[in-house]
Image 1 (cartoon, rainbow over the protein chains, first blue to last red):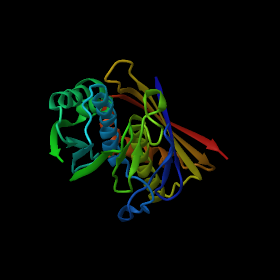
Image 2: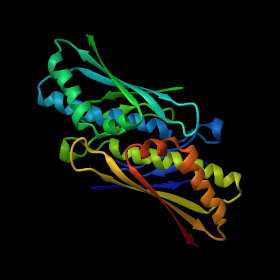
Image 3: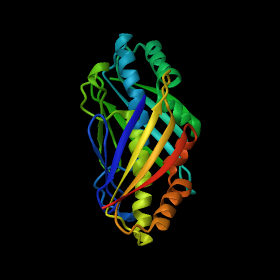
Amino acid sequence: MINKVQTTWKGNMQFESTNPGGNLMIDANEEVGGQDNGHRPKALMLSSLAGCSGLDVASLLKKMRAEVDEFTIDVEANLTDEHPKFYDKVKVIYNFYGSEFKKDKIEKSVKLSVERYCGVMEMFRKFAKVTIEIQYFEK
Amino acid sequence: MINKVQTTWKGNMQFESTNPGGNLMIDANEEVGGQDNGHRPKALMLSSLAGCSGLDVASLLKKMRAEVDEFTIDVEANLTDEHPKFYDKVKVIYNFYGSEFKKDKIEKSVKLSVERYCGVMEMFRKFAKVTIEIQYFEK
């Protein structure tokens, strides 16, 4: 299947990019000549990773009847110093909030996403060392 | 430098993700249980690629005094059929609109972004075959 996205220059350092879920704006910060009226493109990669895996986990927790009250995914990525700057080490931390966690099913959900379903995770493994953590917060 | 993004489950298949340029919503389409109230995470990778290179090109065209009236970047990416589904072939098409193009400088700008500056392009090369095209449209 072919995915297509069109990105249009809106003047200065701003761009508008299409997405099946609605357009989004991209802009640089003021230090490099932008006006901060849009998202930073490199950080979008990290939202893409968390969103891709998050969708898997939300879906799997429901299927396995292992729902939690809340969950967040933190992505911490090391950007190299020299051009072209890329993410060489990426930590993905799954934080689950609730009580009476079904930890075996929660861990299975994360593992299935990381190892089998999440295509963005697969792409990240090709350029970065990816590490995974799971944390529980009893409420 | 460490880049951090936090992504929070908002119920069902929706997530809110932080970005230095403002938060963004992520959601799945209705066919897979979402409500279409947010961007698709995988397509965000393509916006990230176009935005990263677009920022380079906008900046370089200005520095080289080779401005154009408008430009767009089309990204066409082939998604593999089997899980984990990833982009294995990616075409990036730079479309320049205007008149009296300084084609040598425009091509130099694109080349500098593709080969030297754009970190997202560097990451894409690790998992996909990336091809580049430049098109001119006289106004």
